[in-house]
Image 1 (cartoon, rainbow, N blue to C red):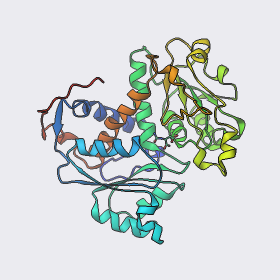
Image 2: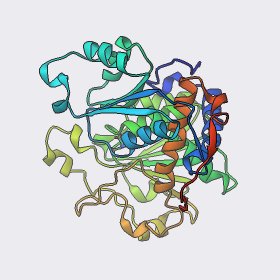
Image 3: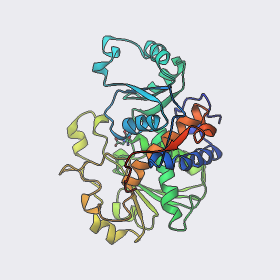
Length: 337
Ligand code: NCD
């Protein structure tokens, strides 16, 4: 694909070479994300950030990534604060907002809404999550994390063994991640969910067509044995007809230290797109795993900044100018990464 000027709406746009190019640029963003140097390569550029669903990581890391490149961020969050609450269409909103921004990131509760918005936008649009459909930048940062966690374990992306656990029906991150994994070879993917929340058939088909072995189970213990990565997810309660329906599944699969020790290989990496649901009745990823060195969830969220910086510089076509516009930082930056 050509990054310059493109919308990022779905992982289906990516080929393996694109992913490799993106990751090379993400690696080069490390000194900036780690505050060793600052760059002003996007000086004067404006990111329009529009989040019509709750978001912490995605919204702030996209904003931080843009700021770290020297750009400014204008935001609107929630329908109640936007003219959409007055009946404005996505088309009109896109025409207007794209006049105020150089690039837009958008999250919206409806499947396909970000593509509809992008079709009317005059500037590139990145999908920050559209309903239960896709979350491409999350899948990219997830794969970037998998790659860096495996590097220390003498394992490669080809031949990866991964378990995805939880709400695979409504979880957009696992939909996008599965599409991304289908670009690699010889994977064994175990899908652990209650039957009612199983991975959509079309996504399973994509994995099988790519030649991967796909196992579906509703038993956590079997699903997480013999894997390199356990990728846990939250029950997506906001997509259910009622909170009572979500209650049927919340807390069904709980990974804690004793379940991990009893079933996982000693080096299995634990991931989660976050937020994990830490309320009593849920706890899909228990806090007693916090001291487990294989818990990669905060390395994963840190990586979001690198990958989102890489997306911005590639889409705005300044990847080769980042270092030119850089200087060392002059404030106290001690921080543990
Ligand atoms: C995810 C999302 O919004 O899809 N969060 C995120 O962006 N990291 C996962 C979730 O909400 O469960």
